[in-house]
Length: 470
Ligand SMILES: Cc1cc2nc3c(=O)[nH]c(=O)nc-3n(C[C@H](O)[C@H](O)[C@H](O)COP(=O)(O)OP(=O)(O)OC[C@H]3O[C@@H](n4cnc5c(N)ncnc54)[C@H](O)[C@@H]3O)c2cc1C
Image (cartoon, rainbow, N blue to C red):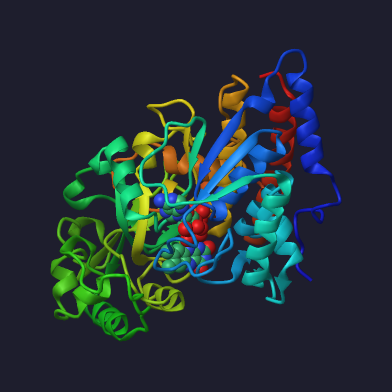
């Protein structure tokens, strides 16, 4: 029995509550019925945004290009299509995805409501019958009175508030339109993602802080390998199982995105002369000069997450845990994000987006979903809910808001929009994004407390934001 963090949707008439609150706050002159929110993209983020704005009483128009045009991965006519796995990941009250799901239920998520109705057995995960899920979601939006227009949008329309949620496979003409609005360096078309591990799971008895030649102080964590350990690592790396690229994903990559295993195949010493070069560290390593050094760079300002520099990879997830676990200091590393290389359209949120999902340069224009640099079905959905709430707030003449930093949704939105020096890489829900909790020794108990707190904080935020005058 998986311990979850929410009551079954339907046990609390949440949407009615929200609607009452909004109507109440509008009484005395509001003009809600004349307001309309426009959403582009009927995927996981778009359905949540449309549903939320509609549930709060606004007219909503949702544009979806299917079935007139399908991306390389979409095949179903319905909205809310799960393009790959039918799993929405973990449900458990001691998991990051469990916390996110609990928060989504608190916010009246259509994804959660429908997923629990179309659930198929999947152990501790929430998996669904994807056909039934998409059918029910589409019917629910129609029943709510969302106007659904099947049309490919090629240029950013002038309607405001507007929520753009066209996802990782945004059609090319529309991607070009987004790029011309944001600038050419503000839209990425491809992911070369390195794994991220939690700081607390790195064995600092073996790893050490420092930068090459002492430049940059303690910016990096370094893991030293001797010759024997390095050669074993390279052998396992080059023989490990890989993910096969999909037909629409390029097999040849430019040098900066080269998977680490492909680089290692060029010769056993290649990595030791490349990203794992051991120069600049001899004085800091206890057992003599290292043969190779793996570096990890801070992934967030709090220093709770570290990114394995240059480790973009196509190894399968279990193989990443096994092979990268051979690196001294990373034997028990907790991977909160695995390495990946895939086609993915996303904006440079850190440059252009507020944590409210509104464009810094233009009030009333919001982005949601994977296009913002989030990764995953539920993460995209949660961002859609917030974009929906904020589009409505703009209609009401109120400033957009972000959930608190100790909710998973709030932490994710802060992460993607925070200033950064390196190229942003997509992020999924994980505990490293949340502020730590002190005084609880066992990791599982700590996770459970963090998750519970996240859901409670989301509940009180929802009540405050939707009921307040602010
Ligand atoms: C191949 C692939 C496999 C994936 N596998 C997983 C997985 O197993 N698990 C997971 O959690 N995540 C997975 N993801 C990530 C997944 O896509 C996102 O988690 C999620 O679907 C993103 O939601 P979204 O609403 O941002 O985009 P989407 O769900 O893709 O929705 C975008 C919608 O916009 C529509 N659209 C695009 N352009 C236009 C336009 N110009 N005009 C009108 N409509 C348009 C599309 O048809 C689509 O319906 C995968 C992504 C890809 C590309």
